[in-house]
Length: 267
Length: 267
Image (tube, rainbow over all chains, first blue to last red; front, side, top):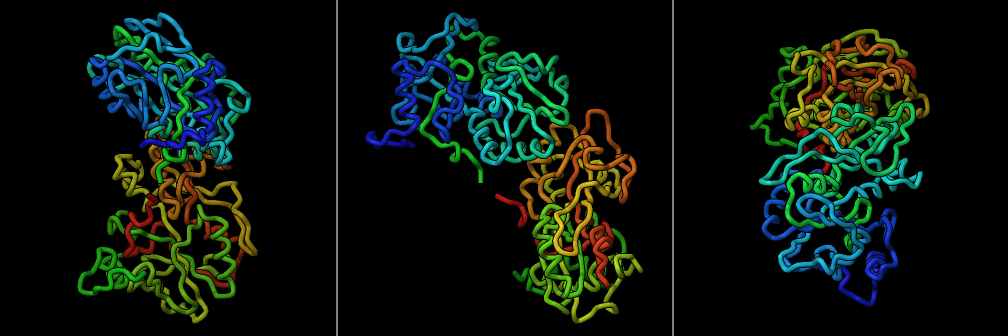
């Protein structure tokens, strides 16, 4: 599914990828190229790839697989005709044996013939749908990163991959919480409906005011926190599985694709 | 949309309506003719009918209109080829000037040339979908009527029709509550997603253990109550609007149609 093959008419996503590739955009991708699907990135060697694909299939909520490259091929034509996963994200995390060894802005020098890139859906897509439906999202209104937590919930283990789920939290009034569940359930390939709402302790979050990643929440009286499976989950799973080599995006610094969020909405 | 025109092959709904018409089934219709849509009934004189139709359009969650007769015509061919609203429901409530004056098992003797019958969607349809999806419903497991409450929420007033919304309550674990919202949002013509969950006081219910209609709830630790707009709402609205003459079904004693619940599920 090659999109935007007409090189003369660059999409907002292509323009942004060009800026990232040239080192002119080095920060988070929140709110850029509106309407365009953004994706989480995981790069593994081919001998770990099948097992990771099976792990994603078994855990579709945290790991909704939307694209995969051939070994050694850094392109993802199903997501954008000119995407190069080595240079088109603003920030990368490099892991060796499950430990982060560096943060990079370009991984071309680290690329190898046996590497496989995986793209996973991202909640930015359904956030756009929520805002469009008039459901306000506090952290976006406040210009903060979404509050994200490690939970006590186990993922479904597959081979060497296992570990706890990471969730992102958004708080709403009850009527908007119902709308948010309705709307996000229509986006099963970008995390879908939340996996929990209400009491954070029920999913192993000790203090909702102390997120592991992202900004501090602002939950007001009468509001309820909703928790969605998060595409950062593979990064915690990789810390446990300890593959010899792995590269991911840095949280919030996503792959911006030529595909439209709308394409991922179910009828 | 005439269904089951082949008289030789009676549907389970037709068989049941025959039993009701003959006075052999006089109780609630919960669980009968599985898979078949059941409906709430409101009968008004023609000079109140347009305003009531507009009220339903303005309040689609409590009053999802799925069928309407011509004045004086007691049939609803869009819901079943042989439905006669005068005899095919087990129990009726007769109102004069907004007050219930009698309960009837057949209203043929009360029928008039100026009466219009309205059929409104009923939550029995989505309950079937919940059970099918493996989401257990406590009151059904316990063989009780669903707990139903008057709320402090105003309906959208139209002409002479106004009043408070009635809701039905079902309690679930949080994961099942999310599934229930997902599933029922696909049935917008049978009340759709809940209008509230959690704190009953937020919608004006003083004591959740004392429902206005139906059985007493059994809410266990960790479970959350979900509240759906209920087709009994028109009956409380009629008490306020005080039309000179009105007939409704009695709660739980529904019109069983030849249409299938599945037909009312959105893609």
